Length: 203
Image 1: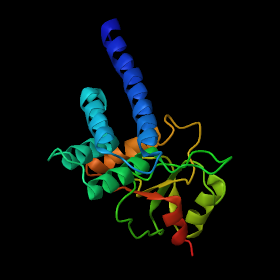
Image 2: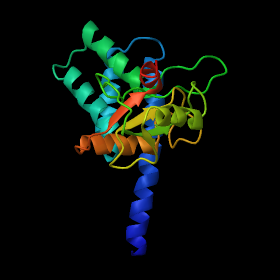
Image 3: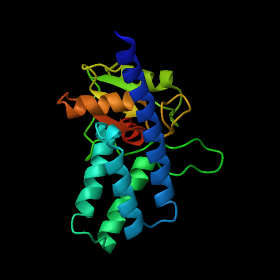
């Protein structure tokens, strides 16, 4: 690979990371006071349009499309403002309690969440789990006839822990979640679900 190609590849990656971090902070800031107004919505739309380099990210594409649809008539009414606020909160992740780490974003989760089966199904876990360590989580799957392993096209379920950790590439979602979202968008039959939903099927 030529030096110029190498620079373009890694340089673009650093720019994209910076843009995603900036957008995550922007989403938290815009939703911090519990409301989103017309000026804030227009600013967000302008930022997304100007930063086209991150629009190939499937999580951000959904946000961009939502904002464009909401502002298609040029007016942000009360119902649309509430919808945009919910989307921004989902993208940014729930605010943590004092002393807790950042909670993971719920934006990439399957909606509605699917019914989970364990027998001969393959699970992958990412994040930090309130249920316990990853070994304990995997043991519950194995007890029910399931399998656990790395994220591949054979994975049936990616389970996102309740809390994000500093090891994630970004504060609200990591490379593994992004990869799973891209696989799902490409037609791979993988479901992305929360720890809470997974725990419900352990009962």
